[in-house]
Amino acid sequence: MLFILPLLGCLAVVQGAAFTPQVSLLTDLPQFQNLEQTTVRSVLRTINDKKLKGTPFYFGSTLADLSVAPQNAAWTSARFEDTWNLIVAENNCKWFSNEPASPGLFNLTACESLRNYAFQRGIAFRGFWHNQRPDWLVNNPFNFTATDLNKTIIPTAVETVIEGLGSTLVSWDVVNEILWPNFAIDGNTSSPMLFSDSSFINTALLSADKARKKIHSNLKLFVNEYNSMSAHFVLTFVVCLSISLAVGGDFPSQAKTECAFKMLTQLQASGVPIDGLGIQSHYSANPQAFPSKESAHFTMDRLKNMGVMGAITEMDVWLPDNTTESLRWQKASIFGDILDTCLFSSNCNEFIVWDNRDDESWLNSASNTGIHQGTLFDASGNPKLPYFEGMSNPLQQAE
Image (cartoon, rainbow, N blue to C red; front, side):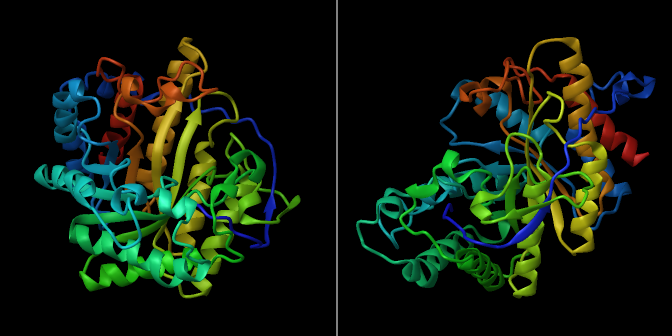
């Protein structure tokens, strides 16, 4: 759901800092050097038995339409048996798929197919919405108004999908990427409805809450956002003139983070149900292009103090080059530090990577992403060093 939001008037702060990941890898320690026969799922069972966080810890990945990459189908099925215990619907549950032709005509078949894929394997299912909107919503041949969207179209879409999928859902990104770093670059004028307030966010979350109560579901409702994990900050003021003009960019942004927290505060003050902030984690192994471990802990603690969950979503780390430093000291430690933060934080129960292996990654078609290679598995499906470093962190936590 992408619409322009106006003035939320958040004060943000900016401080540049060069972050260096912790370069001592757990996989250097003797007890973590022979993990080839250990599965992530077995490690997660140990975490859930010993850590007792109150809810299961989910280590998830995405799944697109089941016809995508059929040559990898057997491999993918195996990884959702031994590695990941949560599936994020990459495209099948987005608005353009669920309500493609006109308002009120729903087709949940594609979304249900992924839900069933997860259910058959006994793993969790997370919903995801983004800017893949149906043509009728973008072009507006039905001449609906912003009031129609708020009163009828958005509530009907949200409630139909959540009620239709039932209690198998564990979490949903109800609104996604609404804090834009640069209006001109992101070109959000494609939306026919330029909201003059944040009402559509409230509408979506209230509708999702209504739907989950109707089906007696424990579904957690998230706002998902990128560049939303910042470091400590100093009092250098930058006015977030509009949520669509939030200061951000390619690097983790303190100003962007402040706008996210301002939004959460306003939602809570308005009595709008919000369970968590999804922290999109598309990072580069370049300096300053990822948050420090201190920043990650700081952000999770802020959320905890608000009574809000944090989820690491869309995690990948692309490489600027193929040097040992990039592969070892940067990427593996970035994955390890962020996962360790989530494991350590009582309000973080979901750690989700984006795309299953390098040959399926969205980074391959993206610009300015170095040599790509952002996932935990190479193009042949073999686990890479970050995979083993990631597995070592839960093992250490379980000791």
